[in-house]
Length: 317
Image 1: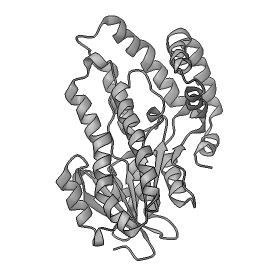
Image 2: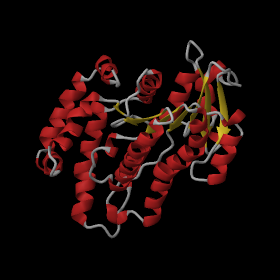
Image 3: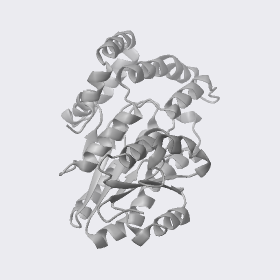
Image 4: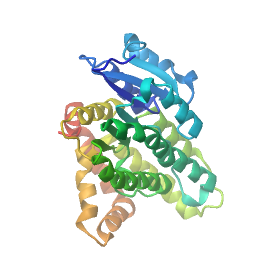
């Protein structure tokens, strides 16, 4: 049970990856400033979290079942917390979707939005009422650099993150009146088991109904370039967890927080040209006209981005 001095932090999607690392980092805070409620859809997948949490489990970390896609599951989870007190909500649960658009069913697209967008909205709605009553709170949303800049063959995932960015940007204005802060965390590529598995699967898939040129562009052009970018610019879940902790502990948390400063020029390029043509044509040329050059550039960048450099790229400092 949380003390009055501790902040109650509820995190979604804690069975692995970023959510797990955020939960463990906050639960092991040396000053014991947080009581973490780590949630996941299936409690059978709790072993990795409990192993990483160690002695913190049962003290500064508790575990609850929560499916962000189910209204009743969300209500039951929040209502099971003493006085429904959630000081900090970290919306981390999410799923990816990658590949040629023609090969993706409408049901798959809806599933992405149900988790990435409506799941986060469902959580915010449930805790927002009590935060307003208490006149304090912090809502942190795990977005993506793809919520700011579209990326080829990530159409639906990108759309779900754009939707989340727009929703939160609108809501943040109202919530400020109630002393509630909204913060977006916007990673680029992150090395997780989920990402590795997804990349392996899509590379092996057949795409019936998709023209051969598009399949070739996806498998022979996009995927190798994506691997280069992951290897050169990818961060770890621990990097993202540290960024979240910095945002949480900031006296004036920023609304947007790019976790990797290497992506700042890419995002800036989009807003430098109101027509949108600069970013669209730049990415087109990088992918289809300057592929070999991009591969060499990423190889050089990989050599330059040693672990010490990557640590310095973690926002918001």
